[in-house]
Amino acid sequence: MNLFSTQMRKALEVKQTVESAVLPVLFPLKRKTKPEQIGSCVIVYIDGEYFAFSASHVFDVIGSHALLVGAGGMEKLTPLSGERFSTKRGPSGTHADDPLDASVFHIQGGLTDKIKKIAITVDDLDVSESSPSYSIYMAAGFRVKVSNTDGNKANGKRECFPSTEYGQDVYSSLSLNKDTHLGLAWEDQVFNGVGWQTSPSPKGISGGAIMKVEGINAMTSHNESQKPKQLLSAITIEQKREKNGKPGVLIGTRISLHLSLIKHFLPKLEINI
Image (tube, rainbow, N blue to C red):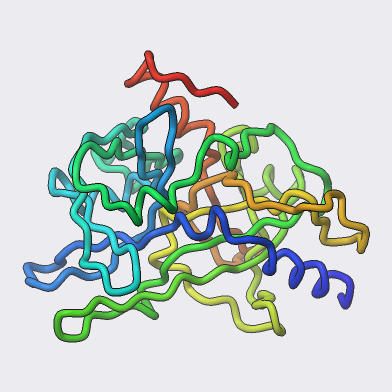
């Protein structure tokens, strides 16, 4: 446990390249005039174009309205215009029962210099089909519980939770397809960088990043790389608590699905990974 905790702390100290590209998504709910935080997204730059990767059920709330994001600091909330690419809706006619739950927002207007600056590139993407045993992953996003509006200010806090991927036996027990999904251990107790705490409800993290920390392993003190880095592996879509003998899990849709959407709707765009 000491080694595990030490390696997790190392992972949390890696340069926050991908983590910094995670922004909160806001929208006025229940006919309120003030926007509330409803989810998260990741800003990605590919071949001259900017995109927001997120979960489809987050974008369902927004509908045809602009994508409203917060870039932090003293900047005003930024409405982004563009077009949305999504996986197929579920039987309900929404993405609430869409198992893939992947959406890409092709940003075509409203970009600020700050948002452009934080965007990650194809060099920060992880499309590997498998990872070494005990690779460290981190889920980053903005939880609704620690977000609020005060007067004309919107407050949010990006949080990051390290974990490891489950083995194939757990994927099978949870009926998860490892080719399309990433399942992270999300037990009733999680490590927060200092100690262990009751795992928080991740509501609001949906649409945020699941990152692999390349170069650091949870169970060996020898770093696999002199320059560990964050890579975007998946987009968070769902959490399931421990129940009926099945372990708790944080589920992400692998970004290969998001890239497939871009290739389908923008076939002339070059994605060289």
